[in-house]
Length: 228
Ligand SMILES: NC(=O)c1ccc[n+]([C@@H]2O[C@H](COP(=O)([O-])OP(=O)(O)OC[C@H]3O[C@@H](n4cnc5c(N)ncnc54)[C@H](OP(=O)(O)O)[C@@H]3O)[C@@H](O)[C@H]2O)c1
Image 1 (cartoon, helix red, strand yellow):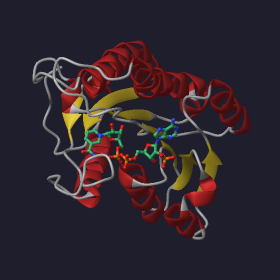
Image 2 (cartoon, protein in one colour):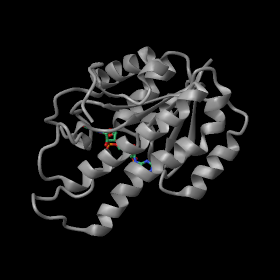
Image 3 (cartoon, helix red, strand yellow):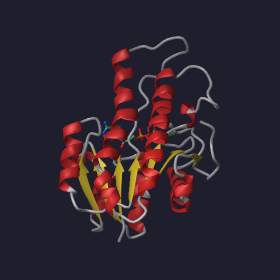
Image 4 (cartoon, helix red, strand yellow):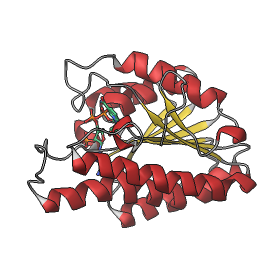
């Protein structure tokens, strides 16, 4: 039974990933900041193949502790899903630079830290994959103005994951980034285009189809390739 490690699995897209892979019989390691309040995930874990790890992805020591706990356990798929938007800043302003730094730590540094810390586990699997949930708002080619904080955080993680993909390719590990669509979650809001089910159905088929030849690419949830 393959193993998937999912960050930010308490709600939204991350929770739907956990439901999907649990339903497919995968061993799901669902990493969440606050297991006590992750009630939807707790009921899922009653099924047996879902284990919950307490993990704030910005806490380096906590990431190291989870990696140490999982030593020797192969991970076929890492999904870097946890992310934050920060303030909804107006054009030509950034309200709070402390928030800006927190968004960069969560959306860029944390997925890199998690990926590098779990690398020994990914190497144990045959043909492991890393999916990092980015956003088309991080695409410079597709970018509009405003939303500097979120856009730059997702552009940054795109660059970091692209470089990581090049370095991991010789080791047989596929790393891709993907835009999940504009999704009805706490972040996306109730007026967004698609449900978490539609988003995750698309993303999981992108993951399933991805080969080493796709490593370092940026995909939309429907499988189309996106401009950096
Ligand atoms: N929804 C959209 O339209 C959309 C569009 C493009 C990209 N995305 C991206 O998709 C991903 C998931 O977003 P979503 O829409 O599902 O958002 P969401 O409903 O706001 O959920 C965000 C998830 O990330 C977790 N998280 C945030 N900071 C964390 C931290 N420091 N450590 C661990 N977990 C943390 C949250 O945990 P808590 O419950 O503990 O807060 C929650 O599980 C994000 O990377 C987001 O940027 C979303």
